[in-house]
Length: 514
Ligand code: ATP
Ligand code: MG
Image 1: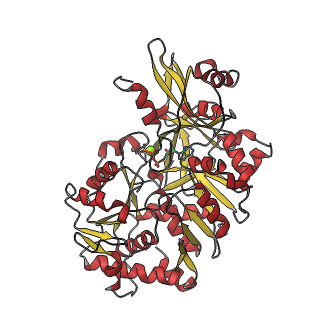
Image 2: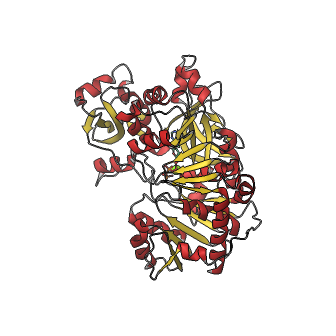
Image 3: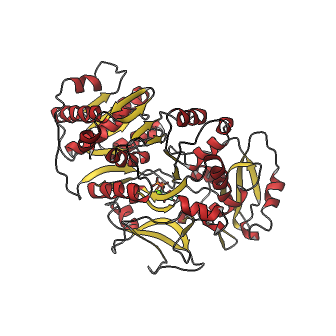
């Protein structure tokens, strides 16, 4: 959006670091202009959709800038999805062009059999140099780097953002130019003020959710450090080597970093913000992370439908909790950031208070324009009164902090009582032998469902099911306590690194109706 402006201010400053290479703001502007000319020369028109599937690399940032210059729509897919899921999503999005690295080219070629809209395939290096692929570098080299700009209206579509698929099939949230602008302001005002010299490390896929940090960082002249994959020791090494000041992780990544022995010896003192979110994280683990990273933690809550975070638990909120003023705040996801109206409403649309549980609802400039080609899902989520119903249940306290209870769809009913798996998981996470845990309802002829805990033990730790169940006595109401425990070496995650509870549940419900 603003790369031309940033290139005027900071031409020689690094916009991107990748492996041992730096791309300056000047280069980024020139190369994204060349790419915009190239896409125009291929015949792409304003409003056309363009997909990119690749692990993180600088060309994805170039593409993101070029798409804004041309008014094209980015199909935001998580490159870590399974090939079948990616093909389904491409089929749904019907892009005109697809850019891919060597890792995904076979999948994209296979997709062209079904996705007839795909007319242009562009390969990042090392390129195959043969049809159907055009070589990305050759396309750029043939074009001038003169500035390119179209004025986009706020209501125009900017991104088709495929949600994580935690609760069902992938669906695409339509994010407009206005939504993305609101998201940029939110990132900056809410949590990530930066300046030249700041280094933001991104190890989640920037083709997808982590892409929301690209434009805010470029606008502020900061540097994006792109990691191709998440490997805990490499991540810690890179923080030390590049003097990283900010990073974004999902909880599962933080757990893996905490278990990595070199976290004790690496110099992490450059960090001033460790932002996390996208899934619940237990207070016990937040405390461990605070001890390991220092007083730099900030949590965000949001969704594809809200174009990024709408609620944040900032560093000071963490401090209030950890220093004992309000310990329970570590169970909150925070307070609304800005821009949006975020309220927890009951079924009649009234704000809840006290112990009452309601649904987190959002209204404002960052609320998406509906699901792509799914009018029924759109009307379920977007009420006529303009509120987005997020499907997340929560309480609100007297200071306006929002405490997520769980997703509406995750609640299980045991003997007539509602149980929220997240709450049970949060207690189990305090057990010293538990590395990770997923709680699901399993079929039971007497109770309808009973609570099962599926546990991954910490390396070298031992515990049996009885001990885990006993641990919950006195910490949880009787009906919430797990009645059975299974141990597994690892839990299924979706492409974002989020726990896929639906896959765990399915294992126990196969062939039965819930
Ligand atoms: P799908 O909608 O396809 O089932 P998804 O909801 O996981 O998948 P996203 O839009 O990526 O897809 O994720 C948004 C959801 O993630 C939120 O609705 C909420 O349930 C969860 N979430 C996000 N941030 C937090 C947080 N800080 N704490 C707890 N849960 C969170
Ligand atoms: Mg969702």
